[in-house]
Length: 185
Image (cartoon, rainbow, N blue to C red; front, top):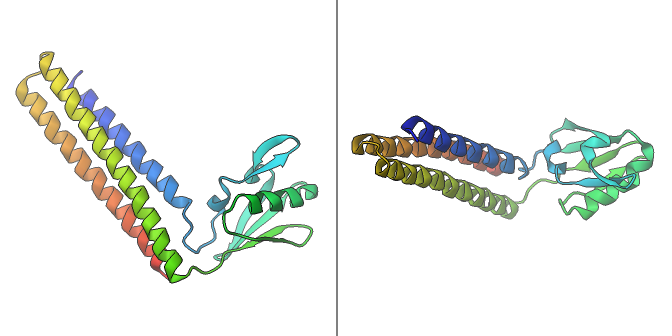
């Protein structure tokens, strides 16, 4: 393997880690209404488990409300039951036509719990980034045994460290933004 291939693979893994972290952080609600809160909620739709977005229109009319408008009015009860059973901490209310989810304001204690959860996700991502760098360094050592020059291998290891530093900065920025979002009342 050459330097370019090893660094490219490490960079790809690190990029996927950052994307995964961003996805996970979207599911942590910060007191603002977001349709992503319903991502893990499935409705029994004619015998198959279907995401709510597959059986209804999900909109956010304001910062504190999620509106679910089922395409089939008979599904209102099933959607309500799925939301209650999913333990996302929201209580649905319906008017026969649509379901409304009101996002309660977060308490200071809950905000601190969410920040802890965000930091835990970030730490998992950091470990994954370091693992990608470690694998790249091991690949350089293996390549050196197979004939790569020592200088090229050392340069590659240095570049892998620079990649780690770059993605760690990106991770820290994402973490800071999410913490600010959670702690802003």
